[in-house]
Image (tube, rainbow, N blue to C red; front, side, top):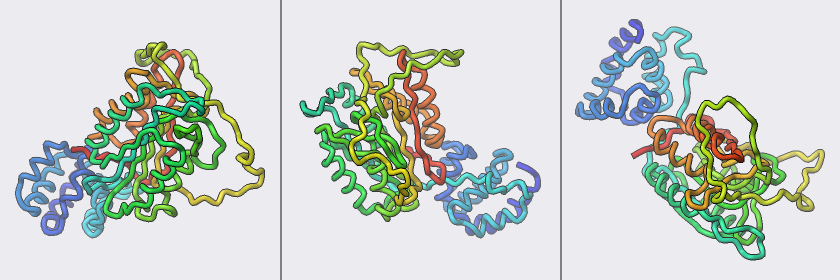
Length: 368
């Protein structure tokens, strides 16, 4: 920390001790790497709120050059604007450039939100869709993982398209006012489809399909007012099309994981544009602009998504592993880059996860 910053903290120490609300700051300072969990635990053992504030100000001065701007931005993000302004007045102009401040979604409630998992395994005989062996493995992993990340998990299995639609609408109609976010996971067969915002469709067990953008739009600010301004996360394990990608040769920077081809299946069905689904040349979309939404796809639009009959899908297996290792310290977008990198290195046929993101802030899971 620069000497001018240290002096400013000392001059402001009395007011900080009197007014600082420390409880909302812990997750932010942890996720920004200013303090470790052990350090935060030590500060919390100092005693009263004032004692904790006094210890925080003292320890902050030992945490390097980025500690001061991170502390000021955390004050802004927790609506302690008077204290942020007090410290900002003495900052050098480059210190608080808007681009330096990375807002974060605050998850305070427990549970932090609902997590709906739709797991389609068995499909009707007339649907021409095969059994999704290994999907129960995926489902069990994600149920366990998201419970550990403080979600209330709701699981539905083998739903027809209309039943999927009803479950999603039911979740969107719930009152989320006392919760901080919402999460939806869909494990099913899928296909490519025409779209305006979010590509792809997923299949019900009856062989009828529902567009991903229809699923997502049930939760946008217009349709679900109690989730306005709150993050809505969607994880889709399904094919985005029928193309099989053999990739191209590169100098490998990580070992290639060759999956056993005998156990591999895809979640693909060929793309067919039904009558009336083509966009009119001069059509104007009137859907609400989505915000605070992230849709993570197991594969890039147009390509198949691979699933091992015994171990589950490449995407879910990798996502679960990355969340296990990094959810306590990294934001979601960084973790999804890790997932994409690991999945892209697997198998003879290749797979590239994709993401459509309109989150306005960094998202850190709440960890126990």
